[in-house]
Image (cartoon, rainbow, N blue to C red; front, side, top):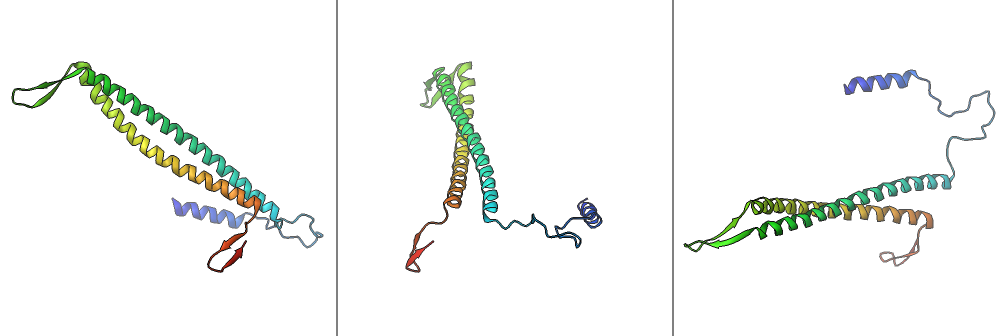
Length: 166
């Protein structure tokens, strides 16, 4: 499948006429050159890409923050279920000295359910917190690149050379 697709694309590119942007001999000098030589044009297009990357990073950060909030709420709900389930249980000491937990139906359902929700919520909280930190770092990096491109390079002290560098 991959080779046939590659063969079709290669054949189509060989057969179709492509405009390379060269001047025809009967035409005079072109006023508009397809080659961009203006540095501000290339830097502005780079800034457009950075702005799009920044918007994408902000959206990812927002989604991850919402996941962190949702998993935190799940941990809270699980703790409430554990508390209600535990209130429906009582501890009984057997004659041989072992401690046993005797629960009614509500306690038998809510306690394990609360433990499951709390554990899964804690795992989700941990992972979404890590992902949020990574996405925020990426967002700060893009913002730093945008600032550096708009202000140029700064004067910095270079310790190995013993002088200032730009």
